[in-house]
Image (cartoon, rainbow, N blue to C red):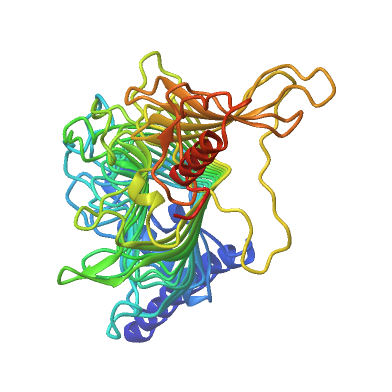
Length: 576
């Protein structure tokens, strides 16, 4: 009897627990599949270890096919990373829902235990242990024990032994003071979208071996590395409408690394990069098929405050992939258009090992503050090359069209709009570029028309009474002018005569060898010391006057005719 009664009590307890658990589960399933972590035992007091409770919520939601893990306002301390599951969204109360750690933890959300699909994180804050402030941009940091990363995971695009990871979203989250990469996605298939987030005092949000990266409308401040790194093995990338401010290295690193090429299809559009240490956009190790458009790159230093070097300070940097010192893949088919480059310490765009690069419609303002040498071609220059072995030899089909180069400073530092090696590189071209205040001439290569084009023309137009000139220089000093004079036009074809002007070594006028009259077509040899020769005859000075032969004898006339024939021969007008 006692045994039967005891068995009955056990049955009652088990049944009650089962009913309670089922009621607990059904509450969350019926409430639009929202699983409140506090219902699973999380305290959010910053003291208790809330990782087991939050993981229970994730596992329960996964058991029922997915759902939203809700983090109310609180500080949720973790001692191990949370393990993500498919079809799960971890969502919180924004700045008030904080994942934190007070001991070393690899990350807040870590590697999945199996294949992972359709996982997202929204509206939470992950706070690390970096504690220093100070002058930025800066590389060095001090920190207390906490997360190394915030979100990290590795998929099978890196290695077959890893789980398949596909379709990851991180949206409207805050990443504060994380010692390492706040998000580090590796080998993710299909889409990884990071949008609307705020990153401060972390390393760079990073992506490698991902199929399609979208980094959109984020704010990154005081980064200890790049603003964002879309690096080796990534295939497609969109980096758009972000703000990168006071980052130690590059605003955008869209490049290869460690012997692997950069992304092969990319768009970097509408970003603002301000006060970067190394530069604005890095396209190194042979990225291809991309655009850099509509970005503002405002103020680039010669490195972060704790790593200054005059070699740093570029707006955009483009290089090939090299293996064993040889070019394995050029950076190619890239359009850089409609960007603002302002106060860039070294120079605007640096190229090497590149082909089919179109640089158009950009504005370069006050580029260069590094080297005061006027003749320097790879410092203080709008577009230049770092190919020192054969300057420009690694460049092909570099187009510069409709760019503006301006130095507004009281003392100009800008040298060349584009370096001579850029201008003379293989099949490269320049058209409709303008320059003001630079210390070296524009030097634009001009070509009008093509092999099969119809009639072409080159026009130099001005108001009445103005000079119209075509100037020829050596090292920036004038040598010859072709000029339409500024003599006022008063009717009857008067004025606007054509002249040729020669100049001294210092560029001053040496003389006017020829003037052509528009009124009557006459040609004047103007200079008293001028010489004249025809048909490759050595030029000679004006001959003395021939005496008057009126009433002269036949012998005298014959002699004067012979003198005249000799004179014509000396000018090259008669055969010997």
